[in-house]
Image (cartoon, rainbow, N blue to C red):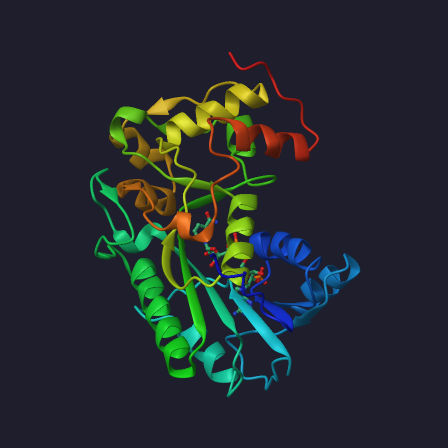
Amino acid sequence: MEKPPLRPSGTCLIAGCGYVGQRLARRRSGEGPVLALVRRESGAEDLARRGIPALALDFDGATPWHPPSDLGALVYLAPPSGEGQEDIRLARFLRALGSVRPQVFVYISTTGVYGDTGGAPVDEASPPAPGDDRSRQRLDAEGRVARWCLDRAVRGVVFRVPAIYGPHRLPLDRLRRGEPVLRAEDSGPGNRIHVDDLVEACMAALDRPVAGVFNLVDGLPESLAAFTARVATLAGLPAPPQVSWAGAQQVLSPGLLSFLRESRRVTSRRAEELGWTPRYGSPGSGIRASLAEMGLAIAADQ
Ligand SMILES: NC(=O)c1ccc[n+]([C@@H]2O[C@H](COP(=O)([O-])OP(=O)(O)OC[C@H]3O[C@@H](n4cnc5c(N)ncnc54)[C@H](OP(=O)(O)O)[C@@H]3O)[C@@H](O)[C@H]2O)c1
């Protein structure tokens, strides 16, 4: 017989409550108390106005802080601080937790830890091979979380996620400005997940007795050019002009170029253990839902 789900009792702390965190906080607040941590006081006030209890805490700062005494679950969503190969921000945050011991710790990492495979598939058993310091910091963070959880007998879950899209996270402004994209034949497959699918995976990780590393993808790998063209079609905007690699180096930002230099086809062997399948796993479904939530018309699918 299947074991009943293991729901953590007590407060769910959402550390780094931005785009994903706010949607998770709304979803989780139906299940029990939630506390959001954000960097700035104005951000905390804004969340509180929208019904999400929040505290301002800069994880890079030295302000003393006491986690809730009834901490049941912790979801960490802040990115690394961006210097070196270690996630110093996370290291400080873990120290600040002191002896607190939640029942579960969910850490959101990235599929960037696999590095560039030239478009070849990777799953959770593939060895990480980060190609830049940003991804090395992520791998460092994953290791820190795993050790922290092991030392305290806390159930730890790491989600490796690709590009997150959803309402207000579509390339609509870039399309309106007529910005070019790297043509599909010069780029490998990219991977994505709709924000609400990520939120549902977090809910599953909080409540089911799973642990370890999981890849989360929508199962629709395609180039950034193909995805952007799909958004354009559905939003009724002109298709973006396509440029070659040589052209891209003149017009695209260094950050985007570095992102485009890597490609892999991310799959998951383990998502089933979560009892999770992406709701937005058919082409265009997540884009349509995002446009609808933003109150934008959906153009005919031609
Ligand atoms: N966007 C993607 O496509 C993507 C893909 C894979 C993984 N991820 C990762 O998934 C996680 C969640 O993504 P997201 O889109 O929700 O990110 P987000 O909107 O940028 O939210 C991150 C949150 O962390 C907070 N934060 C950053 N530095 C902090 C500090 N020093 N002290 C306290 N809080 C701090 C930010 O506060 P401020 O707003 O005040 O800076 C923000 O509230 C992030 O780690 C992100 O890197 C994102």
